[in-house]
Every structure is written in structure tokens, then in C-alpha cells.
Length: 256
Image (cartoon, rainbow, N blue to C red; front, side):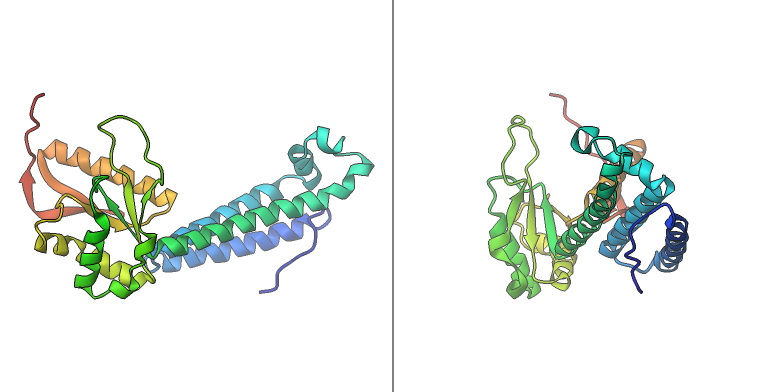
């Protein structure tokens, strides 16, 4: 596909709007056609592309000179409508679009990195999580793909919010997505085979901020549903609420 690199001006804005509309329609058709078949990382990348398209629509909806006037502070370049300031319009517009594309590329690289990482939750700060991870990776036959030196807590610095604070998550990187998936698939099974390991640990894939927001909302929903039925019946797996085949009564909370 040939990219239109001509500057945005009043004379050609309608043509650019038409091209953007055509591309947006193609993207929408693609999203509908493959919505159930693409992996989570690709869905997240598609979300970024949609966001870029929406932002481009917003920019092209406004008059180019008015848009420039709103985005350039007067104390920097003087009156944005003065003849001496017209030379800055193209530069600012191109820089703005460049920043959008660069951010999208950075997000895509981050999504690619996340697709090869496991996140372990609820691991006590003083636990030897590396030994546990190495044991599970060994049992799964993926030790060579475990990037042991890059295992780390996130965030890097421990916060000081009180004694009852939650332990930081642990990020486990692998050389490829396949080994990451094997580790996740066998995680619970390996914990049960090793009773000396903490059985309350949970593992998931490393998620984007948008995915985490969905995850936390689903967890709240599952918690509420369990409370309503007074049963441990619903759990969240990846980004779906799953109904357990053999639900158990909720444990009574001891009064302190």
C-alpha cells in the first residue's frame, strides 16, 4: 500500500478524509472477520491501530489552521494566524503524527515482549520464587528457554503502604511465546505435585494496561457472584469468567 506523504492543507483535506474513511472501513471489516481468531496480543495491537485511526479522524475533522492554532502556544510562535507563523504549521502537524506512530510502534514492541512473559501473583516477598520457577520449567522441559537472570519483581522498588500490603508480582520472561504457554498450562499441575511450594500462587500472562483493567473488573464481578451464591463457583481464567464443575462453600470469615 502506497503511503500518502503530502502535507495536510485546506485544499487536500477532503481527499485525506476520504482515504481515511476507506482505510477505517477496511480495518473495521478486518476486525469483524477475525475478531474470534486472533490471539490476545494481536487484539491489543489492533486496539492501538483503532485508537490511532480515531485520533486521525479527530484531527482531520477540524480545520487544519484552527487545529494548529489550538495546539501551538502563542508565547512560542506568536500569533498562529500571522504570515510569519505559517511555516511552522507543516512541521508541527508532521511532528504530531510522527509522535503518534512512534508511540504505536513502542506499544507494539511492548506487546511483543509481554507475549513471552508470565506473571506470578501472591508470592511472598521473602519467598525463593526463582527456585520454584526453575523447578516448574525443568518439569516442563523448557529450562533452556527460561531467562532466569531477567526474573524480577514489579515494580522494582517495594512500596511502603503498611504491613498488610500485597506482595509485588513476579515477571518471568521466556525466549519465546510457546514456552511461556507451556509454563502457564502446567503451572497449577506442577504446584500440586510439589506440596512444599505455596499452593496459593496464581499465574497469568503479562497483560497490557487495557487488559489489566478488564481483568480487575472481571475479578470483582466473579467475587460478587460468589458472594451472592455463597459458593466458590466462579473464577477468572485469562479474560473470561469460568464456572467450576465442583463449586465449594465459601469459608466463613473469622471475626477479629
